Image 1: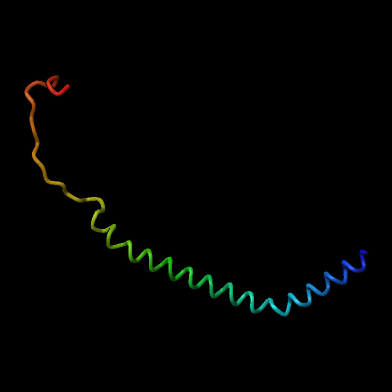
Image 2 (image 1 turned 180 degrees about the vertical axis):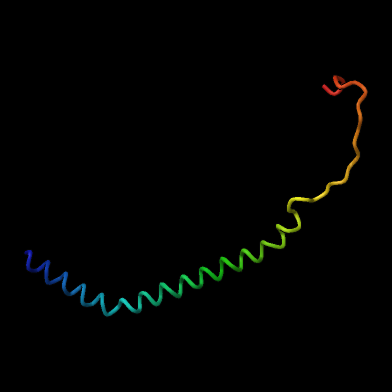
Length: 72
């Protein structure tokens, strides 16, 4: 039984080595696509962040109260 397992292991390794360059190429291509999409999303969100970032001034009217306990 162990001889059969050893033969199967050798066959899997030999066949796997032939497919290894193709698998690494596909993985690299997928990583490049993922990276470019993430960069595009960051660039798309950047203008929206610049408009509502810190330093935004909200105009309003200050109201003074005569009695500080009147609001409670």
